Length: 382
Figure (tube, rainbow, N blue to C red):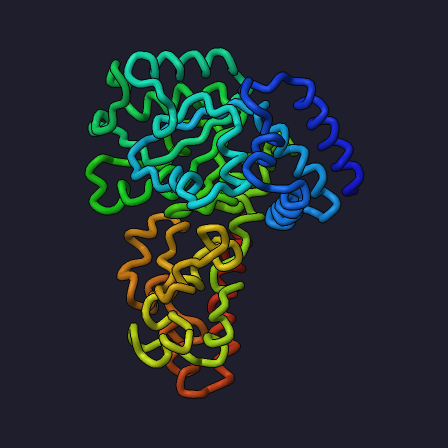
């Protein structure tokens, strides 16, 4: 079966290879080499990305080839109501990574943060790209989108086009659409109560299929991985109930957390700065939302795999979940009974408290409580 898939992938890559590079500068291969990465480094990266996307190891050469052909892919990136943190996740590295180089050398036809054009010229560039690459371009949208009577709260460009108008127009003829970050995926902080701008997710303003890549911000690998998947397959990845790629959002933060052993042992930080915090104990009692949050931060981390919030000593705030600003707070307190009422008559806080005083039988119940969330999620996907 894998062989059949590889044959189809190679047919697609051969087709991409027959296309001319949209960017007439140096090739991605040369750019990677000139940045100090050897071919061995590149293939190691390709192997890691293959595993990261939950593909068989035999797909690594195809992933490498897809990365080398990324400059055949026209990309339009729109900014809505947001902080540009998702773009910064890719761009703000102290030294270039292969991920950021791939992003640099895709044919980025429109990106307000990076392009030199402004005003009328910028508008013209966007309209020209939509027309020239009709049905071929990948659309990436960052930020929530004001709607209704307050749609005009976000206007862009010399003509005062609203964000909604721009997103709807760009979505119509895109080959694939990605909502980058929690704001575009679910509305984000703009949509938090009382939501004065009536901000919504990208999927609420278009009838096209949208792949959500949430996170505040998502890691650079989650962004680049989706580009690579589309290069390889030309289709959408397997998605969960919230239209998130399962290869990136299939497990909870809790599942692969380096502090998970302390949770199972009933060893919790009671207050920030206490002895448990110094010993790296579980952060559940000081508000960690890892048991309720689906993302790969505990495996991927940030800043070139250097660290992530839980490793740095603060609990996960659930930023890749819908409406996390309203549902996951206060961020320094446990969820308690607010997500689900009871498991075998015991609230979530009660479970962790009793584990903490040594009732080992409840360890299984604590884990079952979190497994119940995953099972419920899977049932809703069927």
